[in-house]
Length: 297
Ligand SMILES: NC(=O)c1ccc[n+]([C@@H]2O[C@H](COP(=O)([O-])OP(=O)(O)OC[C@H]3O[C@@H](n4cnc5c(N)ncnc54)[C@H](O)[C@@H]3O)[C@@H](O)[C@H]2O)c1
Image (cartoon, rainbow, N blue to C red; front, side, top):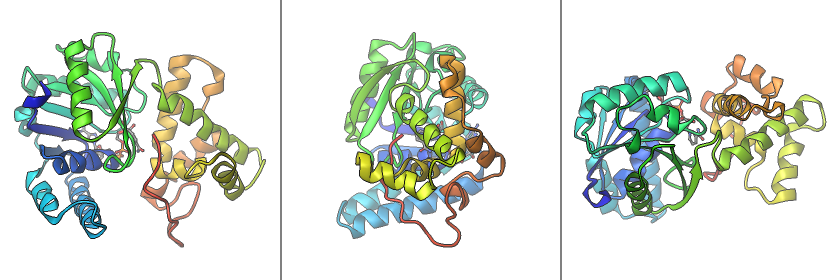
């Protein structure tokens, strides 16, 4: 099936959706990026342009590949434009209600042959799939942030995902230059099941005054060879995204060890969502921190 994928629809033009759209266009697919919010689309368009131009200036891609990628990208606020897509990847906010509503709509307008993939970090693929009439064609395709840079895609099989859908999604991921790992559909899958409790524990260390934020991050960077400390990584991911994932782990796995740290909750309540808002654990408004393009998640 993947040989026949020419057009990819991406839903959600935030940090992940724009990165996925960029990646797919650079690898020769026609891409239609949809967001409800036209401001999000113009932000996505400028961040994709500057990212592609940066790759050209560093000689990572040729000018011809860049020009071709720009030509392949379209932006829309009209869901019906995705009716011609062969494969749809959603990257809207991490909310089960929002995603389910979207899957119901996509199921109605997408080609009957189209696969519907979710970039969710933690929500059950089986439950998202059950809101459609094609659960065998629904799958988790979890890109890491930022999608054009990070090498991994975690594929998540829902209870009804067919072997054909799995094979097509794996082949597409490989065509996008990624290494694939496969997870069964349990809260947090593989990467976030392990990463998020570590980030949450770093918040507990800060909350209980074990150490300063700088020492917690330096400890994990130099002590365990992580490229970023857990608190700066949380800022990079988005504290709202981290909190949503902890809530899914807590509810889905039912153990108190997954309870979100009150400090993480408070930061999100205060609108300190991380780098995207200019403030999270760290304040980015005064002095830009040099966060490398190499997070996990
Ligand atoms: N941030 C990360 O590091 C990361 C990594 C991997 C996966 N994810 C997952 O990717 C998804 C998106 O995360 P993000 O960080 O890009 O979020 P984001 O907040 O940057 O972007 C979400 C976008 O979705 C749009 N949106 C909301 N509802 C919509 C709808 N019904 N239709 C169309 N667009 C809609 C919003 O306008 C916004 O532009 C989430 O499921 C998240 O868990 C995030």
